[in-house]
Length: 170
Image (tube, rainbow, N blue to C red):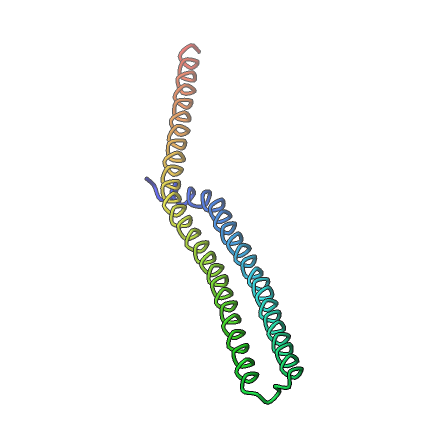
């Protein structure tokens, strides 16, 4: 296969190929951006849960303190241990919320990695198809050129034959 046909086929094929590659890259960027935006929502949601849990803990501790004051136990070790226990429970619950946040954020990162992996697979397939497509197109161009050259030579032979017949008749 002549290199001129391969070069022409490469030029013709690559215009479409490059647009498809750019389209995949744009789609990946858009999907990645969407997932990154979801991370903001996830963080806001879990920040709200942590804030609500801390507020709930503060209310529970205030209720415990008010109950102890009403009973005259303000300086009792019971109130101190009750407040400490409330803080431990709060810390555990906030830790659970933050673990769930980490899990949700990790899920988003995994989705981003899968998108990138999928795009790379598509690019690898497209690259292999590109080589096949260029070879096929180059053969078609070469065949078309051969047919054109053959037709031109046939027409030239017919003209020469007609001229020779006319000269013979004259």
